[in-house]
Image (cartoon, rainbow, N blue to C red; front, side, top):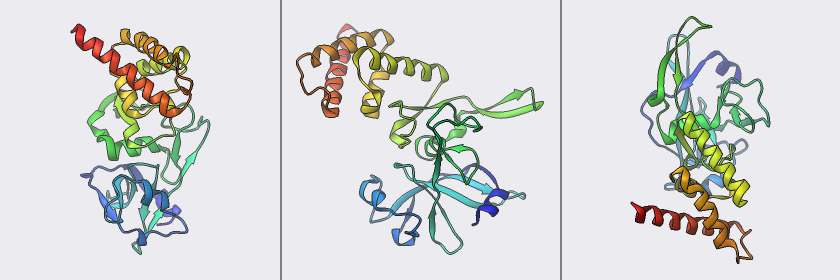
Length: 257
């Protein structure tokens, strides 16, 4: 489907039942979509097929679905299928600052340029984390004078890296929880010198799950472990030491309860 045809369609989040689609790599147009990194690293890789899930659909004026956009679980890869059955990669557009974007916010988000102003992390979260419509409610919009659907939860990048849109790094949270996590991430960086971008989503989930009062103890425990560790700047050791500190704090909390 051409870009002109796409622009005439109304694009919306995929509303059908989301299922895996296993695609033979030979059906991809290699000039547009080199698949080496997917075939090597995609964890959902089965029988030499690429695993895709629908995330957005193009609907014409009579409501008929004319096109579907698919995405992988990792690596921010997006594809659609043409009339000949071949799969074409749709490249996200990256902007260090996005003042004209209608969705997302701040900086460093990636967007689908051919499909309107949709942020890639929203598409991947909808397809691979949880159905976005679980968090939609109708609210009164004064400027339009009518009720409009609004998503009342935000998508958090667990490691604070807004370019890491892997499904394991995304989670739906309230705005208050999102702000709380940003404060915790700032404390880790400023007090312990830990860049959250170096940690795994699993470690960040464990840290965010602690009571707020335990975060200073976690920082103190981490610095104590690192005191005599000359190789603490290696990413592997930072993760290991954070994991040790986290286990210590969890054990203390469990003992106190």
